Length: 231
Image (cartoon, rainbow, N blue to C red; front, side):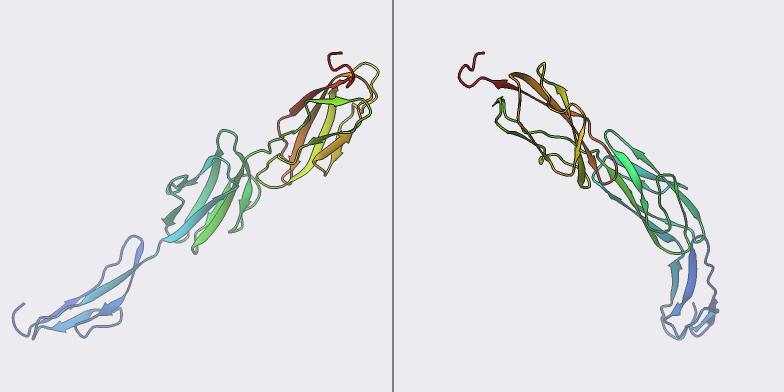
């Protein structure tokens, strides 16, 4: 500009931003900025984004993704995105492989359906994608009639906590009275005394604090005559 002319600027915020004011060159506030160019001057126009950030947190250790509509979040890889103020965002899950979706929490979401969030502020939603529990049995290879044996399931695992051990007898020698019905217990240990020579098999299903059940695990062993182990 030539020396000393006056110049005036106005801001034009559009899209997902708002004009917050001028700084420099003697300008302030949000009205027009008028500068007398008697020397070189610098004016800054300040704009703030009006996008509100939605953050998704995945917990539970299970495989799967969370996606949003409108698009923006695909978590997995992109777990936060900005959405225009007032936008309604719908989140859904796609558990994969062994993953099981156990529910939403945060920002008013719960249950296992879709999560609908109105972006009137920054918000955080948690998606709990878990793995089913896994039953593991440690058992002796052989035993003797009348000698107590212990099956140990303490190595069983779950995304949460194992709360129930469901034992059942699958195979036992003819005439044995070892219980054949499920033995539901909060203890990982099953102790019994074999009453007949022969082959035994026990099955275990564990249940976690989310109510999820494992696939069955089976322990097999033989009860032998110690005086004649080939019998």
